[in-house]
Length: 222
Image (tube, rainbow, N blue to C red; front, top):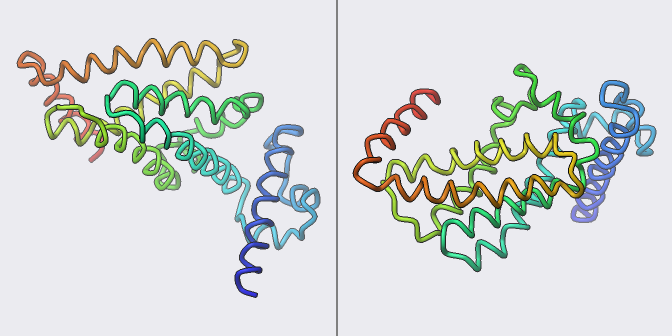
């Protein structure tokens, strides 16, 4: 009975998220209330608030869902490749693949995530778990590769790669090309550059630059 109740609870939660995303797309985020979402989902307002305390939490659930889809989409390339560049390329392409179906209304959501005080901001405390999960993927890219670089730089590289991926996401939001073709092109053209820059970090002339970069990252994070 407990297992059946848990399954039903998860189904209700998924239904509320799916309904909310549809209404956000059709009516706009600001015009869609929790009461309307509950009515369209066929649940009580109290039940909707039981699962999600606010509309922001619903959007966070959407981002979490995207993250889970991205993790699954990365498994094949991470299992098959050892070289750094193919691993990074596969993970970034998988990121775009999982986002493309939502491109139609991505801009509407992005403006809320871009607000510095919003809990949906990727740098906010509320987004901490989602951010950590995203960085973990790039740590897997680095740690599972044959890459040979300075240990301190290796420690910070996953977060830098996540920031790079955020730039890709920002471009994708504004990409009006068919099937987001230009975003895929941007990934394909920039990954070799990133690979070269990372590889150069172990050369004598670049080690001091790498150490300075690591210091900047740690100072800004503190």
